[in-house]
Image (cartoon, rainbow, N blue to C red; front, side, top):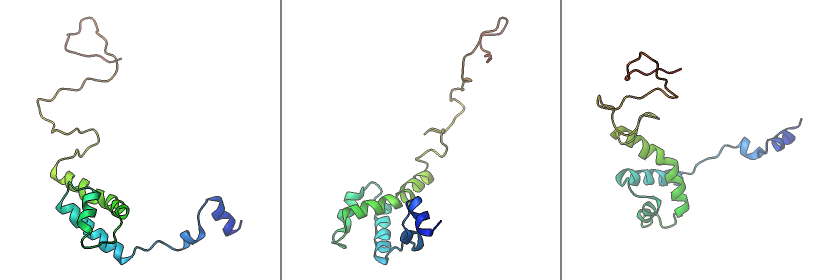
Length: 125
């Protein structure tokens, strides 16, 4: 099988496979500026970040700011919120801390009452 035919089968451009994408220095500088603003003003969205960037960089596109902010968003917000304890660390951990006064979890499924068993005990089949 030829190389061209193989790339056509997997619907991949030969050029994009052979040449890796290169980010420009301007994009890297813009991304660092966006991350600085995002750290300083955590509640700002991409529109307000774009408004703050406009005096320094008048040719910046709002769609580009949106894309770069979303690509760095998990590096800025999620990790810092985890460090501050604002987000749960475990998937089913919930938002609050587990205390000794929390409710006990019953076993899933139906429970049967067995004769001679006290009402507080549970039996699962």
